Length: 340
Image 1 (tube, rainbow, N blue to C red):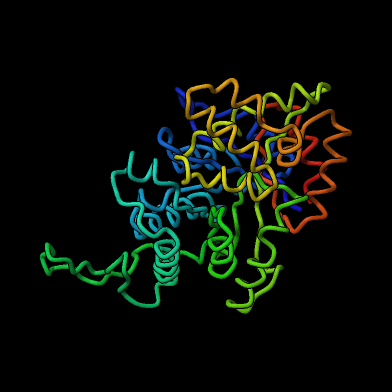
Image 2 (cartoon, rainbow, N blue to C red):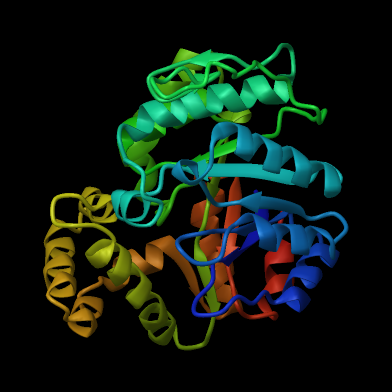
């Protein structure tokens, strides 16, 4: 088991706890990851972090696919990989309709097909075997649309790089199966070591079978929040607003991937209450409906001994990397002890 940390994305202002990150680097944690929604981007913080650390890997969890062309992502990834001394991990994802259409102003479309094409193009660019051409439903390179100039020319990256590991954030069973087939790793959100593989295990195996690979070729990088506290219920209550936001507010009725996940985990009645209350503007009431059991399964909460005990469930699962969301510097040495 490898242990990393997640610096997340911005609230109303951008800040990075560099003392915490440097401590993680010095104590040998595996990686540090940054995210993006519709505030801070995922790449700039990692460039800042890479310039002030020595060995810790830097990863995006995630770069939004609709926000960048595949070529732009490949350029960014190879650049950051080289200036960091080969420490970059590329996490990408389709995001959701709210952000894709409401923020980036592009069609959400068919995210699974787009993701497959995107990764195929990335790998061709990284390989540099020939000038880039591609002909798919989503991407045509060179561009040949009705408004094309006809002057587009197949190009090969000037920058020589490597096949950077590609991780995909996926939540639906079919998209997870595709991720197991075409990616190097999976970034599951709100992963439960007790329930997750009951939902996703068969799909992952099917994806492996299509690609002719196995568990040793694939990194499952889950992202639990970790809170060190003697008051377990208080720690659970700290996480509930985030789960309420995702289960209740990140999407519409009938189109909320996180709500669907809670239902698959066996919390369908609770998920409906949370969504109804949240979309009615009753956020506090929605937060109160988030089950303690769900929070405790997808996070690590409690004193040092309880965190170690709960860690056993993660260690015994197929998860191979834990990207821990932390805000307490005193957690870093505890995570370093668990880092395999």
